[in-house]
Amino acid sequence: MNPMPPPPALLPMTHIDCQVGAVVTLGSAPGGERRYVPLGGGTVSGPELNGSLVEGGVDWQVNRADGALEIAAHYVIRADDGALIEVRSEGLRHGPPEVMQRLARGEVVGRDEYFFRTLVRFTTGAPQWAHLNKVMAIACGEREASRVRLDLYRIA
Image (cartoon, rainbow, N blue to C red; front, side):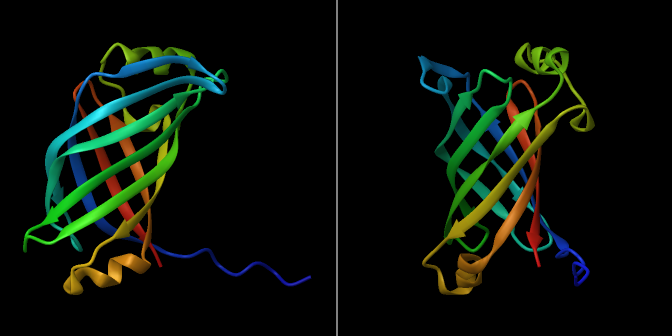
């Protein structure tokens, strides 16, 4: 049996700081509580991508019976040059019940106390950013009372 090759590298790409609104619940549904969080403005800064968030994105969520939160965020970045880049981000947030309760109350919780990861894909028609259409990134997140912070790493 051949040994596994080394894993792909993760290259620092950008940091996103996003203002978020209050959770809106749609109630219990098959699979868990269905809800969404409106996304406001924010900043995008890093070695590969800089700009701002366009208000109006949405983070759809399913709060599952096992305590995990499924995340499906969809928003737009306006790069510093004015180009628009669509972002789709899907993943999970979970942790010990007491940590998740603290997060739900809006308390400050260290990002090392829970798991918050998403797979991120980009789409744009801007020629100068067309390379992003072929990029996959991993985001490591941190939730605060009124914002989410994400560190994105390009999968090499």
